[in-house]
Image (cartoon, rainbow, N blue to C red):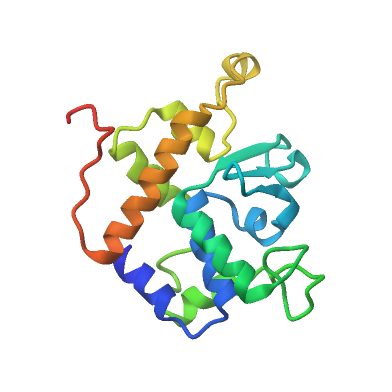
Amino acid sequence: IPGFLDAIHRSQARESTKIAILLTMHTLTRTSETRFASWNEFDLVNQVWHIPGERMKTGKPHSIPLSSQVMKLLERLKEVTKTKGYLFTTTNPRKPMSENAMLNILYKAGYKGVITIHGLRGTASTILNEHKFRDDVVESALAHIDSNKIRGAYNHAQYFEERAAMMQHYSDYLDSLRSGANVVSINSKTA
């Protein structure tokens, strides 16, 4: 991850495309959720991204607590793009970023066949589980539906406060990997 993050930051790609990759990593979203994100989905005062159900794979709305790092990415994006609709566009501000824009950066950085944008979700899940965050909280952050159909039908918990703490921890962890620090989870059951 440290080398990958460094490659993204050093890339000569459009700043908005680099921010799209970083936003996707920090929010655990799917590529399409990032590509079609629009400014009206973001509550910047309360630091929440509300994705409507029609844009989610599950068909259910999903709210994502935003870490301080994501807030900085959004501030930077506003400076760079000055768009009012989609966050990430082509050269035409009315069209969302192309399906392969983020993937092309990975290829150019030498990660073809090594990392995919969607694979970053699996990496995040692994890290968060290793850091001892509760399974339900991690799965909720990934917007997964409970595989137990009965439990899934009755459990509508969002675990928002726990997810907010977890997302901040994950963003801090990504920052520490890039800077070379050794992070010890304060949420670890063994701590």
